[in-house]
Amino acid sequence: MDLGLNDKVAIITGGTQGIGKATALRLAQEGARVVIVARGQEALEATADEIRAAGGKVATVSADVSHPQDCARVIAQACQAFGGVDILVNNAGTSAVGEFESVTDEKWQSDLDLKLFAAIRLIREALPHMKARGGGRIVNVTNIGAKAPAARTMPTTVSRAAGQAMSKALSKEYAPHNILVNTVCIGLVRAGQHESRARKMGVPVEQLYTDMAKSVPLGRVGQAEEAANVIAFLVSAAASFVTGSSINIDGGASAVY
Ligand SMILES: NC(=O)c1ccc[n+]([C@@H]2O[C@H](COP(=O)([O-])OP(=O)(O)OC[C@H]3O[C@@H](n4cnc5c(N)ncnc54)[C@H](OP(=O)(O)O)[C@@H]3O)[C@@H](O)[C@H]2O)c1
Image (cartoon, rainbow, N blue to C red; front, side):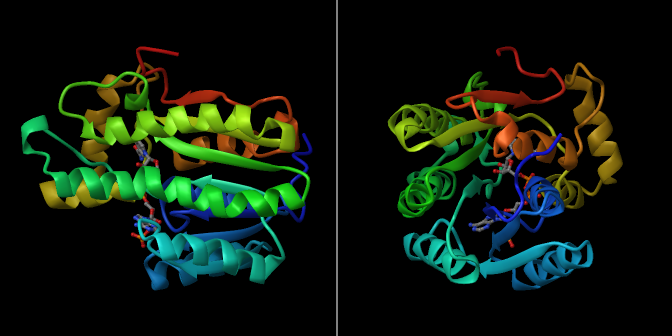
């Protein structure tokens, strides 16, 4: 299937690890010019080298997307590098969960800054460029807790539910501009965050994945590439009538659609 991504300019936040890196590699493989965004300069360079070695076109932006001025700079640098923006994948994020009474105002604020306000600000900056190009694609990466929040999952589930609501409203508001907005809800997928957690727990990461897989009907944790494939489809010409949708990528784990 031709995904029609050749020469499209795609910004992927959190593009140096896990799902973001896999998405950057997948889109570059389809001919898109990718702009990867993360804080760590070394990982940005290493990922860019990998993309170039596979024949892809890539630019890097070192930025903390929880800072408003960095969001504006991401879009400006993408335009400088490749002349505009067609695709924005808001993927940067980390897990932030705890017992409700233990979550301070500061933790609420930093989670909302990273997972909600980063998307708000990047989308607001990217929209004029997408309109100028006659359309665009936005995918907001959230988690399955956004639709089915469990105990002790705040602030993440609240930030993610807000991301879902924003995506739905944006899909209706910007449909006349041919800007399509969708979300994906991630379940358990192999990524850097689980490797760090295993290190902190002092257990081998494969043992952690085996334990995590017990809650997944397909009996395993997903691969980052499996999430990247769905994201690549959503930003592609093949998904030209799909907007305002939310797709679970979770091996069947979510209790809801
Ligand atoms: N993997 C899962 O099982 C799972 C489950 C549910 C939801 N998700 C969501 O899916 C998305 C991708 O997760 P992942 O597990 O693939 O991530 P990951 O492997 O932990 O990688 C996170 C990426 O985001 C970047 N990042 C983190 N904070 C940032 C900031 N403030 N500004 C810019 N970049 C930042 C990191 O680079 P730097 O640290 O260098 O900035 C890295 O590139 C996240 O939004 C996550 O919450 C994942």
